[in-house]
Amino acid sequence: MIGELRELTTLGGEMARRARAAGVLLVWRTQVRTMARVVVRKGRAEDTGISSISGHGVQVYTADHRTALASRDDFDGEKALALLDRVVATAHSGEALGLEASRAEELAPVSGEAVPETAAAFEDVDLPAVTRRLAELEAEIAGAVPGVTLQLSFTADLDAWRIFRSDGTDVLFAMPRAAVRVSATSGGSGPRHTLGAAVSRPDSRMLWDDATVAQFLRRATGAARLAMALPGAEPHPAGSFPLVIDYALAKGLAHEAFGHSSEADGFRSSVLAKDGRFRAGESVGAPHVSIVDEPVAGDHAWQPFAANGEPRGRATIVDHGKLRDALTDPWTAGRAGTRLTGAERAESYRSAPLPRMTNIRIEVDSPLPARGSFEDHGPEEVRDLLAGAGVFRRHARVAYLSGYSGGQANPATGDFVFQCKAIFGLGRDGITFHKPAIFSGSMFGALRSVREGFGPLLLDAIGTCGKWGQSVPSSGGSHWFLVLDPDPAVRLGGAEE
Image (cartoon, rainbow, N blue to C red; front, side):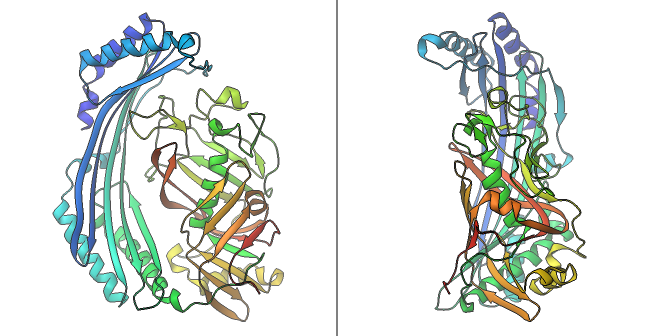
């Protein structure tokens, strides 16, 4: 499939030549994407399939700063050139049509290729072999956690792009993504709880990699055991408490609250902007805390080039407590009063690019050590980390919010509402177990209350980010655990005392 994109060199050159003759800047986005999926329940395939899309999108930008976009579901040369002519005519009629003029940043020509070696294997995924492997893993998890109801799924997604511009830019890149997931539901006649776990790799053969499978089984059995235990757990009291959140919940906070609020196409209403301009330099968190978004090689949401062809940049959204970078594209950077970070992404060649995140994380200065792996740390080990760092000298008890089960934030106000998977009360006198509850409040209150981080950065919390009808992979994380001191603007729901 990547070969289809390599064959477009001559057509891309002709598209660029015709655009220059018409006095417009052309961005020609070509894409081929193949997605394989298997879902297994009770040892049998519940759903299998392979789907694919391919085609191109033509976007032009005129000297009077108007743009138009159209697409086709093929790579027919004559039809592509005819489509370009129609898009050019539309853009040149932009003023009469009422198209808004929007000045774009100057872009330097770029040439490059980024195709990981693992991409080739995605073109031949053996669905029957995947089905058998998932059934084996399901049986192993069920044997370890009797009574749990399981559903396992595997996805292999190869998303390949070639982007030409009429200034000579030509970049080719492929984004291989594979993931295995489990959904575990408690059994019995009472209330049921469903929890999930996942592992991702840029390799469609991940199910046959021993280290990857071992990590998945640890996460999956942990989720299954927790789901089975939750029906008997008590609610946690409501209020403001000292908290510990793990890296997955930290990713949710960074992504939903700060990430979306920093996307420059939303600055008419974002809490991080005033009069459409990014509030760079303003304090929004503790001085030892930063939030960074950038593509990470081998990551589920890795994207080396932006949808207009420029290299995807590193954006330090919060730099030691102060706003620094917005997520911008060539059309929003100038209006936002901040530098271009090449943050635009598009779900497909049919889509208009939008500023979006890739891998977003919360970092703290001088994180404290934690031995082994994240999966080695249950509530007892987390309590030991806190005791060793002297946290219990500040707080008699701390609420540990384990996992992330979704949530949202309001970019206009900075308020968030998230759900964890379970809560553990940690103290010198022992550990208590509680049902999950809503973690809510002000994103500024949460960021200024971060006190300590434990462990190295772990950035494999994966998900799907939706915006304006487009869905793209997302990922991120933080250090294994973050400690948040109590803040009146941050609350934990639960049983009122």
